[in-house]
Length: 101
Image 1 (cartoon, one colour):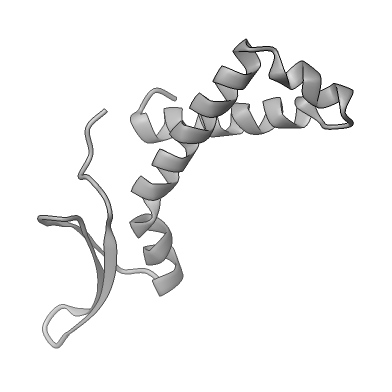
Image 2: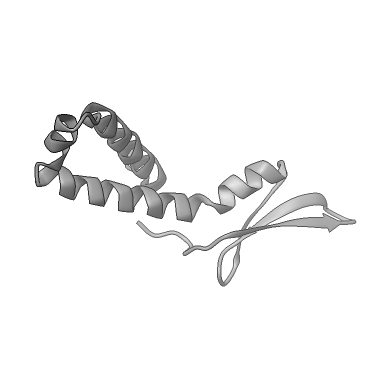
């Protein structure tokens, strides 16, 4: 998967000709201009960080799962089914971001 590397930033632009918009930029170039709220722009700008966090989370918990550690989680009163549910949600988000959905 290839996308503009993070971090991304969101900058409010007040353009007298184009109107107000928010520019989402990567390290070397502008990614897009959006006519949206600042909150939506922040979420868009956080996308590479959120993707990296999901990928890291899935990698760590796949390692734990393969080592049998999730079974031990249940033994100490944890919730391996809940962890597996969150893993599935993270995998779905990764697939959506990578166009594999």
